[in-house]
Amino acid sequence: MKALGIDIGTTSICVVVYEGENGTLPFIARRKNEFISENFEQDPDAIADKVMEMLSEAEKCGFGRNALSAIGISSQMHGILYVNKEGEAVSPFYTWKDEKGKL
Image (cartoon, rainbow, N blue to C red; front, side, top):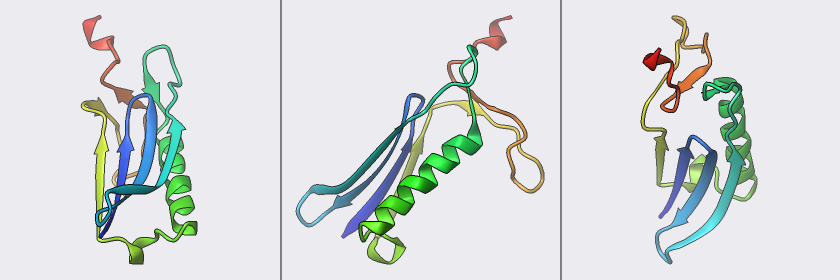
């Protein structure tokens, strides 16, 4: 069994493939997740682009959707992203580190 994991964290984004039969990670990709302001906001489109880039790398290494048994996704503990009715981002991603609420 091969499982793909996607972790979208505050400081980094990681995609891994876990091989259950032998407990190894035959694929690991990491990218830095950057802030676009001093208020800890992030660019949701840049995050999606990085995830898609790493998924493409995994597929090129033989870990495409047909080779996987499961996919797991984890992300930051709190945040706000405003989207339109099509589900497209219309704001930056306001991370859990944003402290504008204290104003």
